[in-house]
Every structure is written in C-alpha cells, then in structure tokens.
Image (spheres, rainbow, N blue to C red):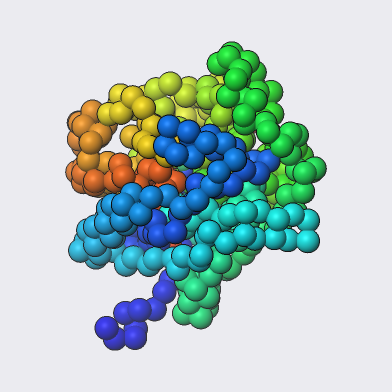
Length: 380
Ligand code: DAV
C-alpha cells in the first residue's frame, strides 16, 4: 500500500456518520479478574468462585477471536480501515505505589477506554485497578496516529490513585448481590454505588456522542467528579448527566444510543429517569423508541455484561447498522426503520467485555461538528 493511503486522520463527532477508520479489540489473554474493591467476580458454576481468578478458557478465547477477526474482515471489505490493539500479559500482577492487584483484565472493549471527540482521543481514567494499565494495549496505535496526523490531539485524563479511599467498601458488590432489587435501585436513585468522590473517575463508554451534545451516564464506573472533569475538558460541548432504571449501571451503550439524526434507541427496561431527557428530544424533533426484546434471557457464560448487548450495535452510516446475528427482533425493528442491517456473529465475544459497540472505538467518521439540539432545556 502506498504510504499516502496509510496516513491517519483522527476525527469523529457522533455515533452515526459514515465510518472510515475504527479500532476493533482482541480477546487474547482476557482474565476473570482477581477481587478488588471495584470488582468481585463470583462464578462458582463456571469454575471461578469468589476469590479465584485466571484466564478465560482457551476455547472461549479462540471462538471470540474468530468472531472479532471476522467482524474486522467484514468492515475492511466495506472499505473501513481497522486497527487492532496489542494485548499485554494480562495475567501479570500489577502495582502502583498505593496497591498491588493480582491480575489485569484484557483489550477487547476499546470503547470503555478511548473517547473520540473530534480530532481528540481521550484516554479515560477508568475506575478499576485491574484496568489501570489497559491503555498500554492501545499506545502503539495512539503513537502511530500521533506520528501520522499532525492535527491529532492525544489526551489522557488524570490517572486516578484508586486507593481504598476511592471506594466505600472492599466487598461492596458481594453485599449488593444480596440486596432486593428495590434496595439496589435505591443506589441508582441516590447515584451512589461503590465509588466515592475522592477523585474524578469515568469510563469512556458512559459517554454517548450526539455532536455538540454529550450524554454522560453517572454509573458504577463514572462518578460526579468524572463528569465534572469531562465538562471542564469539553467546554464547547453540552454535557447532560443521565441515569436510567437499572440497579447497577455500567456504560451507556446498551441503554441509550443514537441511530441517526432524529432517532435514538432506548432500552425498553432501563427507562430514562430524567423527564428533561424526553423534553430535550421532543423539543428538537428527535424520536426515542424502545429497543426490541433481546434474544437471550440469561447472560453469556462468564460474562459481566447483560442480555441488553442486543442493542449494542455499530452504526456504519445513517442507513447501515451492524447487529449481533441472533438478535432477530432487534434486526427486524431496525429494518423496518429503513436500515440495511448487517448480521454479525458476536455472542461469543460477550464474556470478553461487550458487544459490537463496546468492541470498537472510532478513529474517523466523515462529517463535521453539528448542533442537533439547538433548543436546550434549562438546568439539564
Ligand atoms: O449493560 O450489560 C454493556 C456495556 C459493556 N461495555 C450492560 C453493559
């Protein structure tokens, strides 16, 4: 390939403009994480009772990589440039001056870590010790983009210390699992789970990009300080803080996602808790439609993600969308809305950190920054 064809340009303002360049994660080396204040895995039925950790089984990893590779090849065939991260040895113990953590996690969901806003890619703080060093898997790509695109703004949010002061309790999630759904929901209504406000914390996947408006979910991995940091970091954008009817929210992209200008898909169970969100969409002639019924009624084996990965889609352009191939109801709904739907086998990737949106991070989409919500709601 001629060198000019390789030249990178970083730019993406929303989730729907025509996609030209994307990062697709890899499953290799992904771990069931060792316990830490932010994560307590407890999967005795799959050989990982509380307190144990280790790599996901090799046959699962192979199957996930096969699906990821096929997905990447399909995108390439459509003329989209695809880059892949370089996994580290995620089974290694890591430490900072403040703590030691028995394992890392993986490099399947780039969306969790990398937030592309215009010509900037921002590395999120993350809020989990086992994911503290995850950015290293993406550094070879970011270094390359920095060399090739003189306009690329490479940013990293302040690395958090993640001492015990960043968490309320060391076994919060074990205790949370024993609560009734109503007691769990009380956490959501108070916007208070295990993160304290000691320092700003956020995952990139809690941000939904709609041009000038960014919708940021306060969640189990994104605290108020993290959102305040984002607001100061993107002064030209309008940041809307949103929550939904979900006891343990993590990432907005299986909950509330744009499909194209004027149309957003909302989780049929995790309804928005702010009336202002409806008001804003209505005032600007945007329609919000509930998603279809998911194909599965239980999570995938060893997965911390929900069945709502059914709506975790990748929009290739305002008329074309990738959907997991078993999600027939979701595909049908999108077809009826006028989309060309590309079915993608991806369920075996779930345990590695998500669906088609989680598994990708935008590098370049056509289009400029636009204001899709010129009529704003005061105080939202
Ligand atoms: O809602 O099950 C999906 C997103 C993971 N990055 C969920 C989380």
